[in-house]
Amino acid sequence: MIRVRELSKSYTVHTKEPGLWGSVRGLFRRRKVVKEAVRRVSLDVGEGEIVGLVGPNGAGKTTLVKMLAGIIHPTSGDAEVLGFRPWERDNRFRSRIALIMGQKAQLWWDLPAADCFLLLQEIYRIPQSEFATTLDYLSTLLEVREHLTTPIRRLSLGERMKMELIAALLHRPRVVFLDEPTIGLDLSAQRAMRDFLLQYRRDYHPAMILTSHYMEDIERLCERIVIIRDGAFVYDGPLASVVERYADHKVITAHLRKGELPPRPVPALEALARIMECTELLVRVQVARGGVPAAAAALLEHYPVADLAIEEPDIGTIIERIFRERREEAR
Amino acid sequence: MRARLFLQIASVEARRRLSYRADFWITSAAGFLVEFGALYFLWHAMYRNALQVGGWTLDAMVFYQAAVLLLGKLVRGPEFEGVISQDIYEGGLNRYLVYPLGYLRFKYAQHLGSLLPAALQFVLFGGSFLLFLDLPEGSGVTLAGLGMALGAVAVANLLHFLMSFPLQAVAFWADNVWSLTVAMRLITALLGGILVPLALFPGWARDLLAWTPFPHLFAIPAETLLGRIGPAEWARGLLVGLGWCAAFAAAGRAVWRRGDLQYSGVGI
View 1 (tube, rainbow over the protein chains, first blue to last red):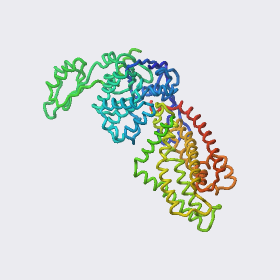
View 2 (cartoon, helix red, strand yellow):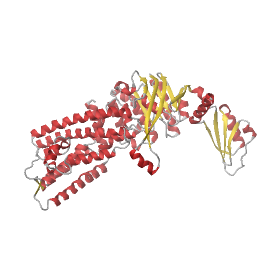
View 3 (cartoon, chains in turn purple, brown):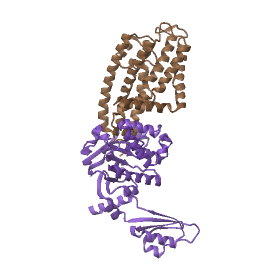
View 4 (spheres, chains in turn brown, red):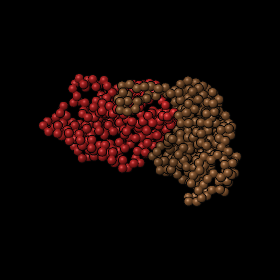
């Protein structure tokens, strides 16, 4: 459904020197810098597949998504989505894709969601019966039926994102691009969003490309992951391999009750985990994935624990580790 | 774009514009009464020692100013001058590029929808003028004249939209095109006949202006409404106005095609 070959995109950016003199000079002369945002990437995504596109800020994820959605033109290379070249913007192509950008509202701020959906029904020429069925399905699954008549600006961020999802999926697209769909949402809204996307995939089998900084999004939704840095792919393969290989540990943070016994590393814990921090207020340890239950039990047994948090290393850490290893391999 | 979709987009925008009641009344008061009040007192001062200026009596001038201000709002619409450049600059264009429709036609439908408050103001204030003030001698507002004037406004509105589009599309290259849109506002106000009737310009300037799109924006619709332009001149004005529309549409298309290749959609 998505076929990308040697796709590249460069931007010309004007830079300005700092300070007042730099601003004055900028009135007469500007320096141009060419930034290669995406460099000769190739990719295939099939029906029903969700591919996670991850990388640090400025890596080129959004640029790639924008090229595949037909928003911007590539500098070189080629791509086909559903048999169309995206940036030619054939209406048959645009009727069958959707783009959800978590950082950018697509709906009309002052209108109730129901009005926006009616307009989208007309834009996508959705027959009334299909529109009613899909809207009912989506709004029930996302639990926002009672908010359909509320102006978008009065909804919470989570409710707004759910409406954005409905708006993007009303026409049952065959390809869905999700750019940071859970950014800024609280944990329960993130979970609801992920559950919904999985259910939607089961029901309609679209190809999806997802970009996210949240490890949880990637883990829950994607079997396959593409890691991008400085515009180039550095990994394209199963998520299971990358997590096993690079995210082989978790971090446990125990917040301690104040005023009780001053903590010190205990041998039972040291045997299980690497102590990262140990103060009067908290103990933080790094532990192998398989050793989490034992390390948590040891913490609870030996320390006056008030609260306990178990965290994955964030995707940035994993990516940094991959890059570090690649650099070392290259030497 | 299908007519039904076009109307629905316009209708959604009209509803959006009317959803702010306070905004409607404040812009009515500030946007028309203050502007008209300032011109009214200015002309009164200028006519203190003269019965006519450039062949215009004070009453005729006051009626012209009222007509050109009210019709001007129907031609320009609210805030349109920055809408497209802002879409380009802030990345709002992204969503329209994903929809299976033409961006420019979508924006024009929205623009027409946004005129509803101005249309209500036209009825409200224009009706009040006709009810409470005597028409100046020699001028006649008739139903036929009103119909002709609205035809001229329709062409002027499209022309203003198409003139503004290539200027705003400069945002594909420049970070800020506010100065261009302000310049357009000032130039069209002066050369289009909002600030003073074009009849007050020297003969050579009037001859020169006749070859430009500016008189078609405000002066011709207002003078048509006041019965100063006959059907033949009106029809010729419409044709020339439509010719300018075609020219600016072609220019806009060329700018858009080049700008589209530059568009970054904001962010990398």
